Length: 256
Ligand SMILES: C[S@@+](CC[C@H](N)C(=O)[O-])C[C@H]1O[C@@H](n2cnc3c(N)ncnc32)[C@H](O)[C@@H]1O
Image (tube, rainbow, N blue to C red; front, side):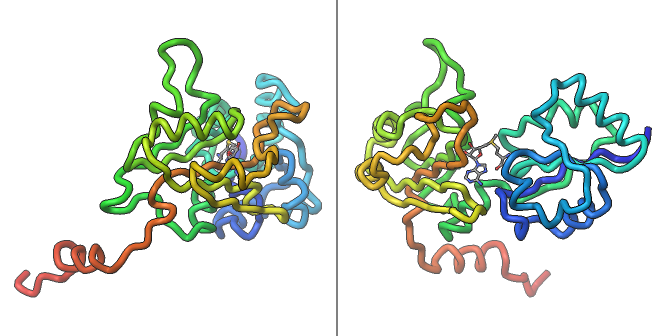
């Protein structure tokens, strides 16, 4: 079978967000497939390695190439964020079967939540989190819309947005039926990281017509902007849930 083919969750872009395990494994791989941008931010870790861009190849050609390389040495793919959500690498993982090893990473959503210093579910405020992309909801009369997903109590995490911000906000406003907080987490983990925080009613003005989603550029690649929406982004909590959990879940029962 040869050496392993690693799919390493590389985090949102900052090599500091690589896990210890991922770092250790990457060091053992002389051949690494690196998506654009990661070649720059990971330059130090990729020194003296053969690096290739996975998207330069069609699937069959890529599989053949990797299989040949893995006969000689361990091969790694840097997977942006983590494989768990919206990752194009699944067919490769399936293709390599037992030879594939998936290493978890920090997803864009985790890094954004840390930047905002907010958990995305909160008792009494948000009782569910939905991760979605308008690109993958489909088209046609029966396809769900962002408006259908937005509702009071929902933290909505929007990947690969391809709608103009004002249109997106109009749909969200109808779904939430109220003004709720929204954050645009742009290029998290990169040197020009930026986080714009507002509400559905003022975010369009705050964005100053900036093209956070690369909608006006020539390229088709989704911009590195994650949208987070929902009441939990601005909620301030007291210790009552802590104490409730201590009483009902955490406290050691002295009577066994
Ligand atoms: C193909 S998905 C990959 C998501 C990735 N698997 C993850 O777990 O974060 C690409 C989308 O993820 C979000 N994203 C990925 N990296 C990001 C970053 N560094 N900053 C902001 N958003 C990011 C953006 O919404 C982008 O359009």
